[in-house]
Image (cartoon, rainbow, N blue to C red):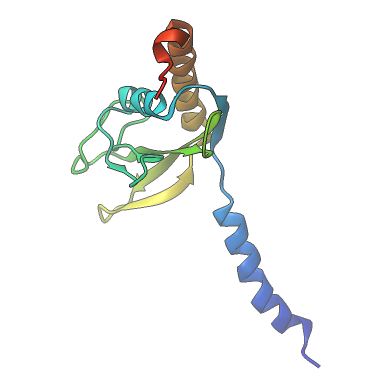
Length: 148
């Protein structure tokens, strides 16, 4: 019979991988805007994105400082942030997952990821939610309707 130690050795990495992959940022629930409108507001807040997925539902921002000022990758700052925004759901209402990750510079000049920064994630999510709510108030339902 196998000892419990070997069972622990095989199950612990699986459990750890499941915990790490289930990292969730701040979620904006039930956004009523269209997919195109949501992408437009994300681009307006983040500026030109660093990378966008093929379907346009996953957006990565350029690096920025803690104050929200965008910085060039070659700048030697002590810490930098980047955001990862996911538009979830196949149709309206969409859920929007906002994550901001922190990277710190080591002595050798390389950056190492230190994890999810919830304070910056909340700050960015509030900006995005305000922009989405503001656009909803300005939208004319008749003009937004497309017959075909």
